[in-house]
Image: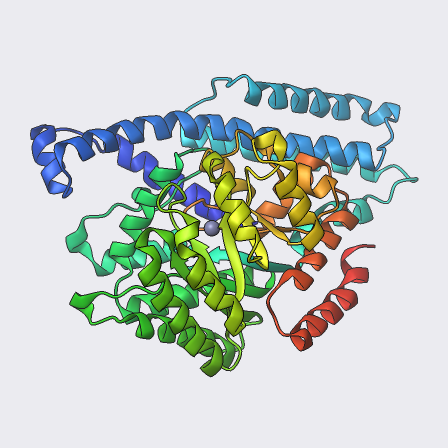
Length: 493
Ligand SMILES: [Zn+2]
């Protein structure tokens, strides 16, 4: 978590500096040229910066509300006593929480200076500490245990990440290194991530990837990026990771699609040699925008690697801009992948217009579904889609932050996690693009727990269930299950 907070604040500082430094000494036209943009792109960029500032403020209110919700939940869950000596403080904090929760919904105006934001944040943490301090004096409540319990879920939780795109997972730190390597591109890091409470349309999110692809275009870049991403997931508590990426070729750096995959696998090997405590597998991705021929080529490549990578390449992903192309054209490639033994993780119904396509893809059927935002009838999908998925028990990879920031879901509490989880359907929490959306897997578990009031047991089960949804060989699944079983009593007291 601390890891994420550092990222977010780092990003905000950078953004703030960026916004303040916009003195237009030589007019916008030349400034646009200096940044390598057309006038139109530059104006859009300026507009984006202004919007980002407003969104940052709204996000701060949202963050406070989220924390307040967690506190309210913990208070309720553990039925904290309201003894006279502590009533005042608890009530004060409780009222504060209420205000913050309501405030976020009403888009309250908050101080814009970052310093003030951080100061308030610290104050709030201090208040929380002092409440716990007061409670400590009560004999009938074991506060140390309570505090441990409240924090353990998110600090000690071990995780399985099954939906992570390599390029979208690049952290701001790594992005800065890439930017420093390629100064001629004139790229600012604020263009490679969607910070705090910012939101973008799905198509704007895909534009962010275009910028990232410019930065990651050689074997050297891919190796660095893949190793950093793996280490960061490991640092967050992820013990099993399935990374996915579309192999790209870059004539100017001599990068071929085959070398692209080999380099990712090399990064996995190096991390293993360096004893990074994480098991990593790879899914070769088909970008739907590139059409059926490229899809077939990619499947053949994936098939080769599945047979030669000693179990590292386990499956195929279908992703890319969901508004481009139709899944029916890709069916022969996907069918071939399935027949040769590659597991299928398909992005499905990410936008409302994909109902017919989802029907077709479900006939394959896939082994896991990415997002599936509009599959259920309440979101414009259908009972028949839901019935098929339930009958086949196909797990869903759900990415809360990605969907809210990408604006396919209006808010966390409206996320379709609730629909599927409520039906006890296998749901796996994932990050999608932890770098682009400034999140990590602990944060996603935290969000799900606080938004939907999950108990620690429920959070633990959710994390454990993900093991069986992975494409890992049975022996690896068993080892992970054993590890989870051993850890459980240490995390849940
Ligand atoms: Zn995705």
